[in-house]
Length: 230
Image (cartoon, rainbow, N blue to C red; front, side):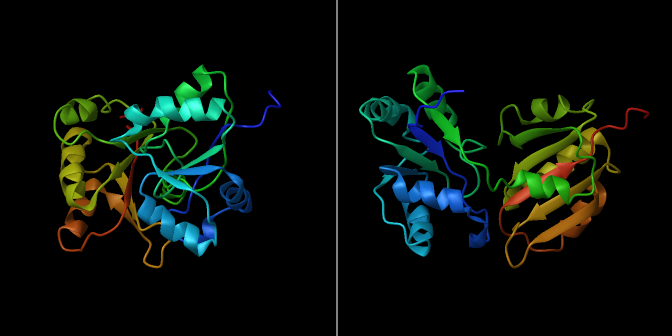
């Protein structure tokens, strides 16, 4: 293991409850030369709450290809960066992979701190098997969506998706059609926040529930895998 100091830190931020920030994350954010933020306005509020004042630079899906080369050059000159997303661990359904790959390719050091990631508490409290699972993140909005779902029809591990409120019912319907309406699942939303909700049941029951209940907030959908005995 290299003893060289990291040039890039990946720092998880709270997915809801601000108390979930770690002491180590605060320390890194206080000492980094520059903090790369997915949305500087959102991250600015968090840093203000933590009483951290460091230079903020925008780094998101729309500019990452244009900025990554210059960022690596600055790291080569000795600058230390901390990458954060709006919530959770960077590079998990958020920008970060490209930067990590290029930093490592340049022979520089990367370190990811442990911390908040939405799919872990959603999986654990779903009541579904968690010894083996597959993380699918967000399904494609249009092209390739059905193909991705059909490719999971024989999956025996628990499957985890991220989803938005306005697409959840569509997704539940498509999964019910592909996997069967009696497949067990859990919808977790607003994790760690005051109005956290975990709704468990069959896909059919979840569809019925969300046809009459308001949907807001970030959503993790956990779906049981196919019963290998079926």
